[in-house]
Image (cartoon, rainbow, N blue to C red; front, side, top):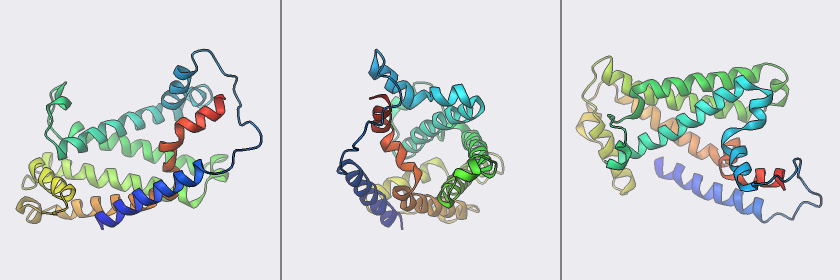
Length: 225
């Protein structure tokens, strides 16, 4: 399923981007803000700092900033599980990053994003896919964090960071391998759930709002002119 999900993600995302960028140009301008001086820096600010959200919805802005910083750290943490690279140890730490607390912070952010969609006016603007996406992400981070909590808090130490590294590296090498530490661990089912739901997310990605991660630059370019 990992390889099927990866294929759907790559092909689906590429197809969506090709369709978007080969569509006929819009007959009118979509610019809603005047082009400022230092346009490139302003564009980066729009993409990464969400100034409009900060002005109008400061609480949402805080959760968005924390969530996106958490995603970056989560990405680095997974890279550390694949490659033991010293460049990530600028600030010395033990993989996985955050000791499970990073996942907890992301889970709180996702619950906030989810429950605000049950309140007007966001409720009226939401579609079922919005709820599916947030629930999938919430389950991914909860089951992923639980593996860290189980090892650190409940002493299920059979499944180690090295076992995760062997498993993920073997997937990339197209020779899947499950170390004994994973097979005989008392909480290996959590890894199964984590990977399964991550696969569902990858399959759903090209058809969800997650596509904004590829479209932030062109969208903000259109807004700024």
